[in-house]
Length: 85
Image (cartoon, rainbow, N blue to C red; front, top):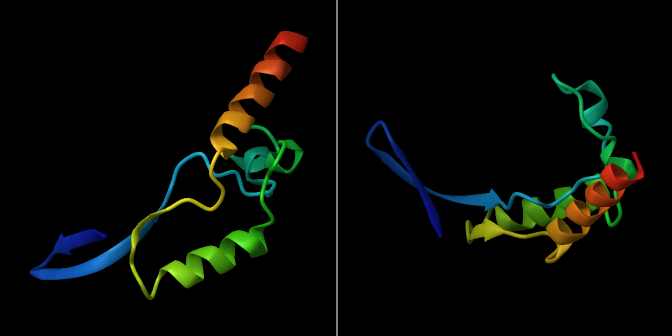
């Protein structure tokens, strides 16, 4: 379980793991650009991720991985895109 400390208050936290790809258009509007994650393989529906995160909050169980193995799939997709150019 993660814990956040500051101002004399300690409270449990849940952290969404890096590498989970949520299907949004964020990359199209990000400073410096980025891919439209809706085009990445295995990108998760935002509502699905919202449910997983909301379910994790009451338990503050530390790291939350919404779909194991997704990082590897996203990296491979980006490698294929780079080879195609």
